[in-house]
Amino acid sequence: MQTSVLHPTFGQVLTVRDDYVPEDPDGQVAGTIDLMRRYVQEDSHSPEIQRDAQEAVGSLDPSHIPQQEIVSRVFGYVKSRVTFVGDELLAAGTGLEETGPPVVEVLIRPKDMAVMCDQGTCQRMGDCDDFSMYAAALLTSLGVKTAFVTVAADRAQPNMFSHVYLAAYTNEGERIPLDTSHGPRPGWETPQSTRIKEWPIGGMGDGLALAAGLAITLFLLRGGL
Image (cartoon, rainbow, N blue to C red; front, side, top):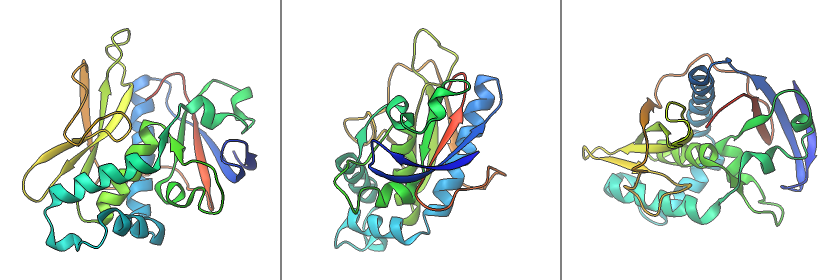
């Protein structure tokens, strides 16, 4: 289902799309990651993301600086622009949080994060998947390879993925964890995970149809990231 609402948090009209993914927790994560990768791959070519990517590296030419420096600058740029909030707040006001299963995943595609609030005074915000998609799109547009990293970081549910961040792979042969939502610096990743899996951002899956215009996508799940 797809509808347009005046979102109370962002203060502007957004297109809201809701979809169901498989019942099992691992299937839910795989379905969510599939759409996240599709958002990143498509939006990394958009003028909105290319604008922000250039702003992140400043006057530097990305082709003439170490990719480690690009990763560091993108990390600081994303941390300075986006505020962390939970999906409960992002889903509020859409009307969908009051029907069906609990809404536990809200995805804001990278090009929408780039322009969100450009014409107003609201604060860009999202949770770990939104931070990760935005950073991945910026890095992809700057020629840095990335992968999503899902971890089970909740001791009460040691087999269920509960957090997502990035791993950047530079052309210098370095793997740099990039937790833009919770990490204090590039290279940091949670030491408390009981399960970890990487999802390279390469080939496109079948995914789901993408909504036009400023949009948030809500997955109706029983568990999630």
